[in-house]
Every structure is written in C-alpha cells, then in structure tokens.
Amino acid sequence: MENYSAGTLFFLRVFDSTLAQTSYVVGNRQSNEVIVIDPKRDIDTYLKIAEENNLKITRVTETHIHADYLSGAPELAYATGAELVLSGETDPNWKYEIPHKAIKDSDKIIMGSIILQAMHTPGHTPESLTYLLTDLSVSSLPQKAFTGDFIFVGDVGRPDLLEKVAGQTGSQDIGAKQLFASMQRFATLPDDLEIWPGHGAGSFCGKSLSDVPQSTLKHEKSTSKAFQFINDEKGFVKYILDGQPEPPNYFATMKQWNRIPRPLLVEVPKRHKLSAHDFLTAQKNGLAIVDARKLGIVAKGHIPKSLHIEGNKSFSTFMGWLLNYQTQYVLIADESEIEDLTRKLMRIGMDNMYGYVSNPQSLGIALKQTNVLSKSDFKPYFNNKNAQIIDVRSKDEYKSGHIATAENIVLADLENSLNKISKDKEIIVHCKSGVRAAMGYSILKKYGFENVKTYTGDLDGLIEADKK
Image 1 (tube, one colour):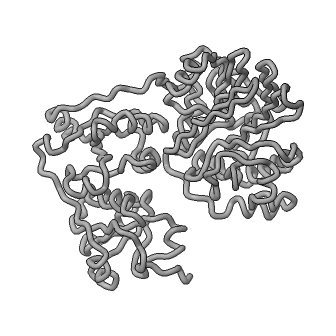
Image 2 (cartoon, helix red, strand yellow):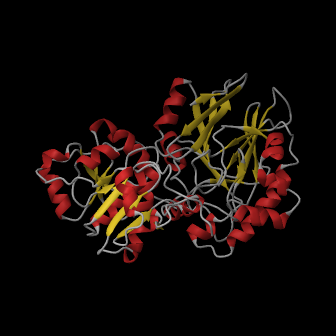
Image 3 (cartoon, helix red, strand yellow):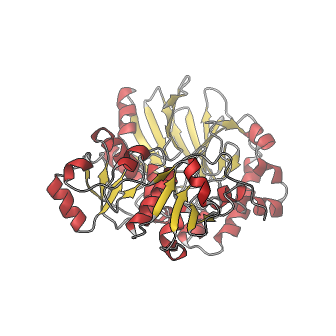
C-alpha cells in the first residue's frame, strides 16, 4: 500500500502483485468519508485501512465490469453498508444485474471539497468509467484520473475481451473505435492531470503495460504508442487489435460473475487440513490434486497424476487457466502458505477447495519423481527422431526464438492437444524457466503419457529466431 494523502485528500493505492491489479481508497480526511474504487475480494484489507485511519467507507465503486478478477465491490458494500455505485452507461446486451446506484457521464460523487466526477470512457468495455478527482482546496480543475482499464501507463486497454471471452461477436471493432473516441475526448483534459490506472505490468488487460504506478496525460501523449494514433482512427484500430496476449480461460467466468448476483465471501475462508483417510477418499472420488509446492521440491516426490501449479505470483492466473470452476480440488502446500494461496484463489472466485495436505509423505502413497534433464542431457534430443520436444511458451515467445525441432503447444492448450503428442516417442517439455514446463509435465503424466521428461533450465544458446 502506498499513501499519497495530502491536505484534505485521503488517498491510498492498494496494489495486488499477483494479478497486477490496483484499487484505490479516496476521500476526505476532514469528514473521514471514503470511497473504494475497484476493490479486490479479500476485503479485510480495506476494513483494516478504514479502522486504522478512523474512516467510514460510504461508497464502493468499479470502473467497469472486470474480466481478470472477481470484484470485491459487492462484498465490501455488504460488509460496510456502503452504497454500491456502478456504471449506468451500459450496453443493452451487457449490463449489471446486481442491485446498485447507477452513475453516468458527468455525475458527481461529493465528499466535501473532494469531488469525483464520472467520465464515460467506453472502448475496453461499453460501460467503462474514468473518475476525475478534483480537490477544490487545491484547484477547480481535475487533478487526478482513476482510469481503470482505459488508460494505463504506457498503454491503453484492450477492446477485444468482450468478443473473445464473452462471445459478443463484432464487439472488438466497435470497442476499438469507441476507445479511439474516448482517447480523443480524454486528451482535451489538462496536461498535468495525473493518471492512476487499474493495472500494471503483468496484467493480461493490455500488451505494453508499465510497472510504474502512475503517469500524467502529457507524458502519455508523448510516450505511449497508442497516443501516436490520436488522429488516425484506422491506424489506431489496427494497432490496438494486433498482438494482444491470449486471455486466460477464467476471464469468461469473471466477465459473467462480475455483473450478476452471486454468493458473497466477506471473510477469508479457513481451510481444512485433511487426514490421510480424508485425502485418500477425496482422491478415490476423483477430486483434482493440485500441488502448489516449489518446482524443486515437487520434482523430488509428488503424488501420481497430481497437477503441479507452483504457488508463486502467477498461481491464481494458472489455476484459472488450467482448472474449471466445477472442479473440486485438494491443495498440496505448506501450512504456512495456505492463507496466502486462499487469498489468491478467492480473488478469481476459485472457492471450490475441499481441503489441503502439507506433507504428501504422510499419506502412505508411493510418490513419483520428475524426470528432469540437464542442458547437456537435453541437447542430444534436438535431432532425435524418436523424441518430441514440446515448447509450452506463448506463441509470441516461441516466434521470438525457439529450438529448431521443438513444437509449440501453448500450456493452456496442452490438455486439448493431446492428440498431437506421440505415446511412442520420448516427450520433453520445456518453457523458459521450468515453471510452465513442470505444469505441462504434470498434465501429460495425468493423461497417461509415461515416457515424459522435462527441461527446467534456461534457453541460453539453445534457441534461434523464427525465420518465417
């Protein structure tokens, strides 16, 4: 958390590095009232902020219907009795269906001398709002803009998600043109306007996001590639639709759940530690086993047919990418990490955890070791006709340079591409650092591929640029 409070203004930035997602607590330090913009779902963060600073959360809002995380706005409004304020600038086919107060373009939220004015900035989504903040004790002109997924530092929001993950055919071209118009309107605001975006580097909501927390309109006009097309709609549409990263599978679920009534979690769930008997029963009943321990530990001994997703910063993204929301699962993780992993999972609504186990050795199951190759062991397979090398990195990573004989099957597509993999050959799975390769290895082993190895080292000296 970073505190930017000054004078009358209370202003706290809350950053979740696991999803590169930012929320803001903004209000009046004299009246002690604040609004929370784009809260994450583990809302105890905001309750603690309010308590420690003697603040009352009177309103909760979102800049738009999110795709990359499950918003905590309904939870926080429920827990505090705050008013839930959401965009009324909705598309007839795409709107909020949860009870709320609608706010539209030019409407104001007034907290004494602190004014938040809604500005409709469609493009990333039809209902997208930017909140312009004016502290009247400083100036009558807006000083800050909470842009959500409209303007990022170094980039602008992608307009293709509604089509790609929510099935709104034709919406990406419409969205790109709306985004262009929104940028033109936004560009008329004061040059020294501070931009405070909803995401940073690491998010799938854009393609060139910076890890710098904020910028100014003047800086973005001069440095952001998107703004170089400010007078060229056709060029902008082509630029913004080209090269967007493949959105994780779970985005489709988030887009729906964030606009409809759903079960609320106002506390971080306490997870149940399973006995050996409970675990074996769960395994027998077909529950998924997800091993969140570190790469090296899992390689030395893991439960057969378990899915390995290391509990690192990208844990929730890959869980949402590789598991569906109907699957009940058991987590393998150190007890000290369970709360952190639970928080990461609840931020994308993956609440279907049956329980956890910390010590697989105590279960009475014969553990398996991962067949890991060193770099010197890996190289002889490059021209081995009896081997199939699978590169599970993204398509763009593969194009930027790959092992000449490696086949690119993106990790997220692996489970649906098993017919492309030979059971008669030695299979070697690799990525860039080993983390995704380990996940790919576990998927193949789960589906009965026995002769599988993984290379978890770096690619220095092994790859060449794509000549196509």
